[in-house]
Length: 331
Image (tube, rainbow, N blue to C red; front, side, top):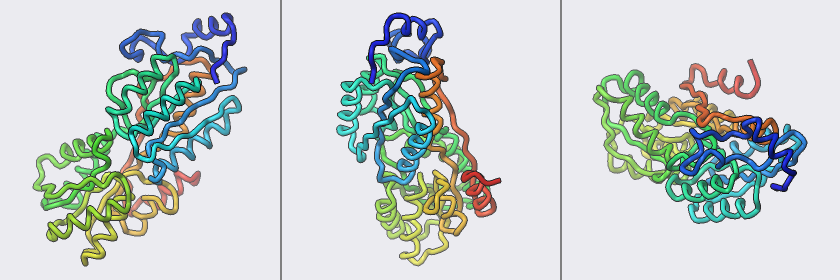
């Protein structure tokens, strides 16, 4: 929790340009916003982690990565909150963290616009805010950490154009939660990737990132469009749901691609290796990077970049096993 440490400690922190805020990333209210009241290796710091929805395997893994990273920083205690895909609940949880005077907030917003104001409230209170994976509107936060979803969508579109359907064809799209920035960006990027091809999205449904809903929506798409030649899914769980729907529709070999590539037994890398997904794209959770940024801000009294873009890559059956081993510490 944030406690007064005296003018000397605060002064030292400010003299070191402490703590991650510059005019560039200060939002609308000036350079002092988003900077912690204290920093240094001799402190104890409480971090609030506001998660959009732990029912998604990707978000469970994100929380696990944050826990693992924080375990190596003795100064850190992390308190987790699950919004269960409820915007109002997440707003309330963020406001509770502000009331509790956490030293730093990490948030992966359920949707961008509804969470913009509470994130700005935290930032304006001098709480450094790390926005993880999904964005908010504006720039009233300390740092955004995540992969480039437009580029991932573009790469997926190019994979369809050059590999899956080089002659063109009709496809279905399973989109993520409509108000989340990855859903919009993965669609926009995909449209760029298929430019100049004869690929046509003839049906699109929101699966809200969930396997069961992905299956339901894919079932509806296949019934209405039995001649589609592939499905582009915005994440792996919806893609796995679509595989079940395709098998039920007598299309067990329908090409389906996903995004996430979690290196766990139930994740997308194993799904590609087993042939349930034709391809996926690595989408790092950013959990470890968020803790590293928090350590820079709170413990090391250093600035962090306004944006940290995490790497991705295409995973097919040819490299799925090797990628799985690499991401789990193998060679």
